Length: 152
Image 1 (cartoon, rainbow, N blue to C red):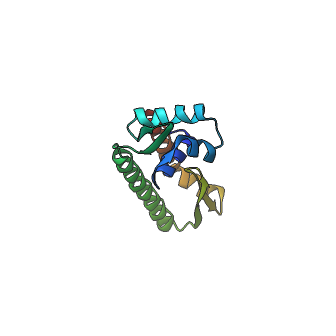
Image 2 (image 1 turned 180 degrees about the vertical axis):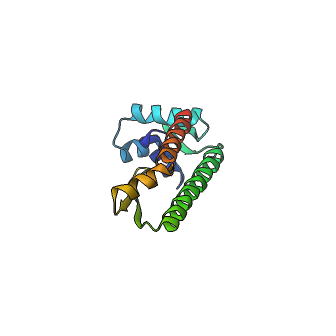
Image 3 (image 1 turned 120 degrees about the vertical axis):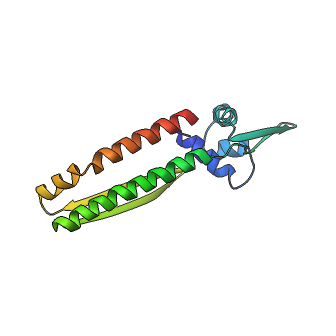
């Protein structure tokens, strides 16, 4: 699932069956290329295929992403805790920070998350970074990358 095309295929099949030809057209790739992507998803148990005549139809397989969903929920809770601790620190010290988070759907199963923090002084920024938030985010992203690589 680390591959954006495979995420897109899985997302598309979540809405219903599709043939290899349909998927190849949607993702603008050759039949051979699409078959390779589908084979990887099939080996992971995320997709099943059946051939009737000359048409191979794909659907979501028996393996769900329950383990991954649990990990993501744990990750979300951890981030929420870190942001709460940062908020407590800023409130306790009287510092003011402006935080915005923007999540953009890029299509084909991809998304972009942008978190922006604005501090009034360099000291405020350094204090927030000293709270461990930045390292925690980096560790969490690295752990998510490792998890997704095992599915690929």
